[in-house]
Image 1 (tube, rainbow, N blue to C red):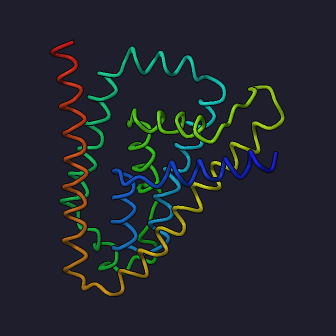
Image 2: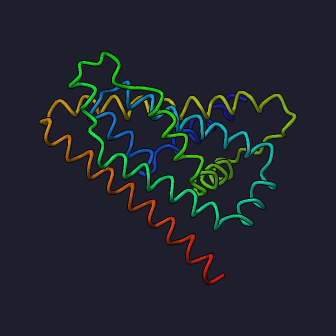
Length: 209
């Protein structure tokens, strides 16, 4: 049991580590609004990773079939969502709330953005499946070991985003406001490119398949 819990924590950390649109959003929030804003955003990814871990245990065959049958639609919708979030990141002013002396610059909106990015990313659930296989986690849906492992995946993901956002927020002290603004804009452009790439892949599948 202890070994499975350790493996679950490693799955959560590894699932969060790749630099994707959620990580870029966490970078933006951590640098512009601080540790709490970045961590709350990262918790959105933790929720998605935990949901995917539950699916990996209880509904692997169904989800694989669904993804294969609706991959084109998922790519188009996911690309649109990610692209729109990238536009929002690029053209919004992340320092507006600080300029207004708002004592709570971070909000549930950041959490929801991360959840939306994760849910509409068809590759994320495949990463969870691959990590379960890589670490040898083969759980019975009705077994007593399921819940501790799922919670350990959530703990590993949350731990990663806590450390990641904490480090970035401290790094931001070395940057001027103008530099941070450009980092935010560049981050938004990268997310937009990811969204456009997803839409393009979905359009190619729709046209040629």
